[in-house]
Length: 229
Image (cartoon, rainbow, N blue to C red; front, side, top):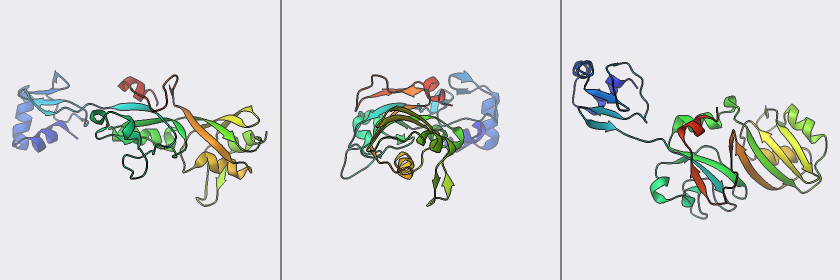
């Protein structure tokens, strides 16, 4: 939104008066005097007119180690949610940037920044997500080539983006995806006749859980959050 339109919307002043207020250097944006009426502002810009704060909202970015049995949702009547892992004061107005199944563990991201969360989950951003997979049957060697070529899902009439499979041993592997389709990992392994017994997401982009314990979280700086892209 343009700065002059924001001021007009949040004060009783007319459009012309808003421009005069700006010209008189009575407006501050993020602590700096601003006279540019056409300046594009975001929901996280601090806007002050004559010392009165019209908007002051901090962007919040959270990395959480989701335990098994916790729902990737903000509200659920049967299971604890990811918000239950956070202090109530911090959890307010947060939403998920991508989800994990109930039994899947690992890294989930929460934020109040809708534009950022859309970028994290959009396939065209190709944010890499690293999973550790444990399977019932031995992992076939040809699985690497199959996943690299993309797996066709008939019910969606779509083929997955190329994925990288690094086999650890007969039943364990690292899988890197660049998108997030519903139950994608389980469905990919099902196409090669195998069943996923456990799934853990270790990394999203350049963010890794490291020593973060299950149920624990850490706040990310804006630089860390934007470093995903």
